[in-house]
Image (cartoon, rainbow, N blue to C red):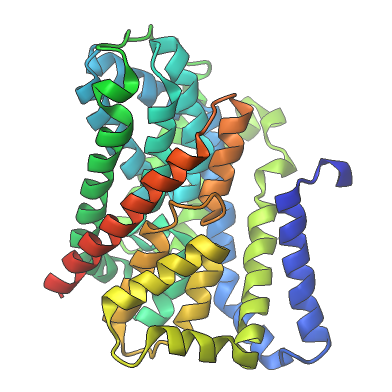
Length: 390
């Protein structure tokens, strides 16, 4: 097992070990450590539930069927396919979390590319950019949203009411950048694509159970059911179906242990660093004016430097609970801007790995340059949408 661990896995393990060391040496008082663990309990339950639900939904071919039917519905027209793909990636990100889009939707789209004779890079860039920029609307869309819900003081419906305009703005800007730099004729070369043949579903019972579980999860969110309850409940439906129809698919590898130890370590390390100077540095970077544009820029810059989860947690610590607008601006920075560096978000790291496994080359200079443009324009427009609707 140890030989199968990658560099990123060792980084996660090291982060957790460092957090435990801080607690053991008293650098982080045991009381504060216990409070941090209480805070992330529901978050960890949600993580397990949503990843298991998404993974088994992919295995049931739900994503494959939707992607293939989108390509058929586009009838060889790239503009129509572009609109369908952006809508699909945005929907999956909003309701099933950005990591689902990056980890599970990316291979589906890349598998569709050769069947329809489509260049894979436009499809790949659509998934990763929208995995980040379409993750503003709901708490479940991004882990940073879930991290901030208690301090922001909004329920899911109130959160969506504040973020609908920024979400529309960020998706609109992303679509413009995708079309100009990856989808238009001069970038993709072909005038039309070949609609693929529809393949039969392997197991209609599993397909139906997974589809129903996803619908029930979305309905539960709309009915204000706690995400820590809705996600595992929906996952149990699919797990029960697989226990009857295909038990060998139910393995321990479904549990996202990498995410669990990363988040746990994060909630031990960041509070410790904040006690010994990090909080002062963040306060200096934010300044005294509570400027939403500056806050978003600081969050986005840190996300592309150290990753969006520790960036959000580090900056959030120095923003007062009453500064709701500033906290939402920080979320915009840590959600929309992590499109420049490969390590800016966990979703981006996982996406690069998926592209490597599918032999899809990603031109790094082009990725960074176009991502920097999207981050800059996206932050300005999205924060502006937040400010004018506040």
